[in-house]
Image (tube, rainbow, N blue to C red; front, side, top):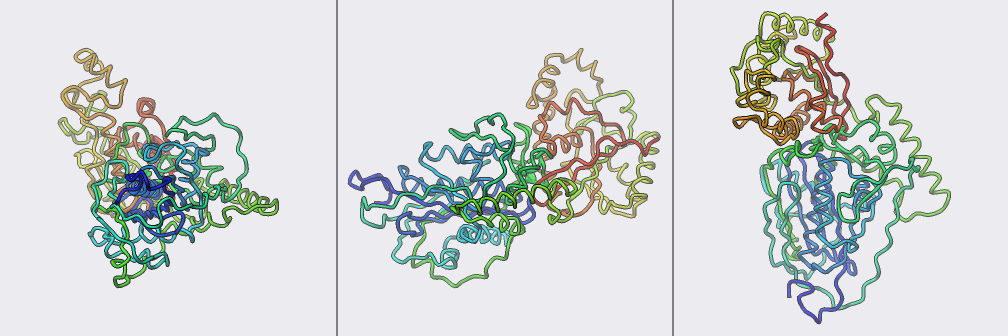
Length: 571
């Protein structure tokens, strides 16, 4: 018998423990997850899952590990009850309904996790990272395999042996992996032979105890439910590319482990980058971190097969320090002295967060800072005509070249730009070339920075579009999914493209200041995602030719808008 619950004489449904973890080497950066399913009564490892995810954020990887672990448990017994143990307080608190899920990257993953088992059959418990070694090592094995361009294989995994949980006599009936879905890990957990006597009594699950009491925040309205029964009122800790400063204060102080996507303050997130796809349809699965270079899977552990040569142990992940900090309070600790110390510690961390620049703790290192330069004027700019990537591709006018010279002089005086990346269109490459000549740098071209394709509207004024295509224009103004007449690019598509580009560039230029020479829509989208603003905010920003804006992306995924539409250098 391979499926629990298939035999009416099998007794009560089983109880599983799922331990899951995810990591991102760069946050966002090359990432992977690991998950293990154990028998709650015996501690025996029943199934493992791991997958390399490509470039995503730490939080996205953690959620993907959770989904994979729950799916593996369900394949073993769809009627089971599950205790989830994770060292990510962000995931535990959000899935327990005590914290809001505000980041667009996290919402679909949390909802997917909540759908695997019926409400009430899964409980969540925070554990220190030291107690989550098995899943952690699986995640690192997946990332190591991805770095080699390979797929994680259960036959070569030593995670079970390394953590001392290997038990003999287990049988495996499969180990294949199913292709992952766009937003969640779609892993295949092979069926395993049942172990232990049918209906054997098992000790009840230990109650989940918060690992570390935090200072109560002011009451807030309940967040919108992101999954059946999952609502909360606390702020979402460092959500991910895109979390606002107000979100990050009071959450980082209480939760050192929460790391978002992409430099993000929006949330990989991103990014994204993660990253966090930050706002509705504008952030699709592509925004989470681009295509994966390798897929993974889950497999029931085979006692004999586990006895292979031990491979090199994966080194610590970049987020190790933050996770270690989260483990300072032992789960289940009680007493007024312990509570007081934990609360005082939370107060100190919160104070440090507020006191540090960019709303980030001082030990996160230098952020990746994008200085966003809109190109200089073209002949179409003063006429306010649609000029995207599908039109005549005009060059700079004389006024535009003069603007580029002025911004080059200003950036040379500041002396902070270390690299230049430009859209492939003529006006941006020409602007970037003028600045690069002054700074002595080369120009890299990034297609993701190009302007939106405005289809049949290219070269027309807003009034002309209103006259010729009134219905299409009204639809475009009302929905980010609407395309300009003639098969142009929607703002939703542009947003997904820009988010994916952001995640790649944050990973490539971590800790550096980079000048991105782009266009109105992409630059506004960078800012919108960092602020976690809705798509309609694009219509509420003014962005002048040759203006400068800036967004900083931190290692934990938080983003900070430093500057917007500065034209002082043109005066």
